[in-house]
Image (cartoon, rainbow, N blue to C red; front, side, top):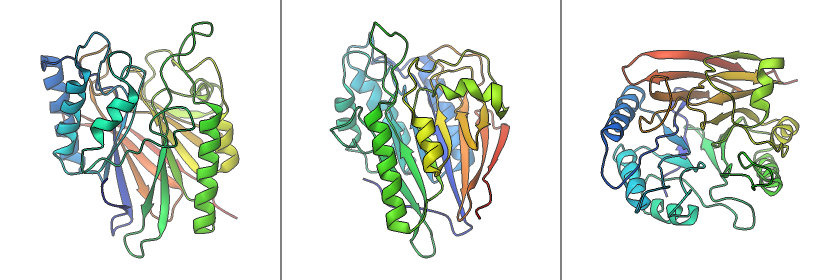
Length: 309
């Protein structure tokens, strides 16, 4: 378990989101080498305070020893000596390995902040990480990580949804931070599969960035977005899954964002890179942009929260 997350003394906290690496096979492919090269370039350019990886780190289907692929990913991230947090996608445990086995592997890495989460709710990797002030060590922000699952039952089809017990867990976590701090803390949420509301942002919200494919959200809406609206702490959600989307859109005051896919061993026409999210201590706002592997910065986005009464 890594050390406590803290804002910098200039009042900023920088998160670098990588998603959909799709490292696959026991032998490193040319595509995997390119993926790791982009990861290194983006980390070197941004030097974040936290690396958040939102699923599909590896291929597991058709791979005899997916644990080797997973260790290659973790070894490559861990060498930077930067705290990192992980949630799983639909391909990580598709075959030949379970989420529990994946988590047991990453527990051995000093910079991993991931937690398996409560064992009485769906998923492996439902947890929260507070970000503290550099000056007085008080909690200033919260980062939620949730397991959005894999595939829905055959009679429903499509992708799994974040289950009701996970939504309840999130609401209880939020209440816990209010009790501990006397107020709601600005928060972000990270998971793999986009919520159904990602479709609605085009009808009702403002957005920027690229949408080059359909939004592959679950058919079932389990109410996480409504819970976030009612709780009032989450400023934005960050997902992966759809490799040709990288947009951010604001819907009813919550920003719904994609990361930029970084893996070459998979479909997708966007240039590979990572999404950066910068928080500001004491403010309900964030800035975000995409850093491409060639060094360019694109897709600037700003979330500015409503003023409190």
